[in-house]
Length: 421
Ligand SMILES: *Cc1c(COP(=O)(O)O)cnc(C)c1O
Image 1 (cartoon, rainbow, N blue to C red):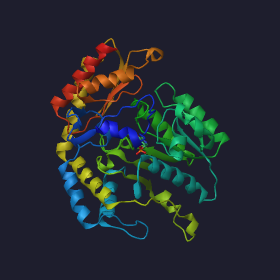
Image 2 (cartoon, rainbow, N blue to C red; image 1 turned 180 degrees about the horizontal axis):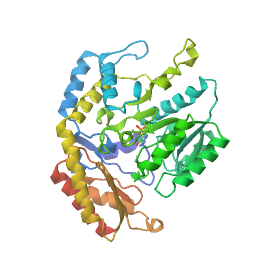
Image 3 (cartoon, rainbow, N blue to C red; image 1 turned 120 degrees about the vertical axis):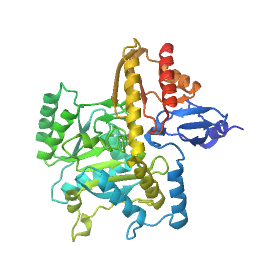
Image 4 (tube, protein in one colour; image 1 turned 30 degrees about the vertical axis):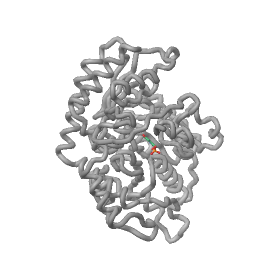
């Protein structure tokens, strides 16, 4: 029996309606930018397996470090104990994060990093004797699938069964250059009628909203407003972190730095699940007390797992290499050239790019969209390219180590795909 068939017996996949999509593809090997399935077909991983494997799959620099750490210390309770990989990771991160970040808190994935950030924001006010129970978020944001993270995400058609249990969240549109005044007015109305604890946002690029990009000056205005109203700002950089936007973090494009940051995905370069919620000293200080109940009583069994910390350290070391920074510049420039080639194509409505993130919207009516997404996905896979269109958007977020030849194959495949729509 093939893996594909055995899979059907006991497995339940994420984000999948199994009746409509019964078939999976079994991957047996991943090396560099190439995935291999059980039939021996190769696919270029043009989305770095959900933006994680930015240094290529099974990168020996990282796997060797993790293998060595495995012989030394595998796992230890992180309450009351500590270890070199976690300490070194905190020291290293502080040197590359925006300069106001000062404390590092560990969890397991992007959603938990967001839940921790929300708890920090709510308890920050609570510990100071103030009950602020409402959060602000962008209308079309995505922050994960646990309850807190789901609550602050833009309302999804899939959230029906849970909506009654969500946190209280007020939503504002993303700034587009024309709506600054409207946003400011909305913020004033919300803050006049509710006690706002925090504002959570994906800085500059919203991944799940199909790489929707927004204007930095508008975000700057919102962050300034939050500062003056003592609203805790939370930058969810789970997707944008570690070089994707052309800087180590998207927040480095902004003058106003966040109070809290959420990191995951490329943090461990695709090797291990781990996440970090970092914060400024002021947040930490609000929990520092003789009163035990003012502490942050949140923890996970695998918090700061030494193997995951080691993977993160190795990957940050790679990120800082001149070779990697040159690769990022090379991919940015290749995307620029591709953009010139494709932006006037009649089937292309618009294109956008920040750093190595490139997206194009197809010129199709969403009502008549039908199964186009599935047809496009199948077309890409049949050509040996793993791309995962979102709605009417095709986007590329390939590993930094992708070759020019592999990039050209991705571009060519996208161009060919326009013929089937
Ligand atoms: C993926 C993602 C999350 C959720 O991370 P998981 O590890 O899938 O729980 C949260 N925020 C953003 C911006 C993401 O892209």
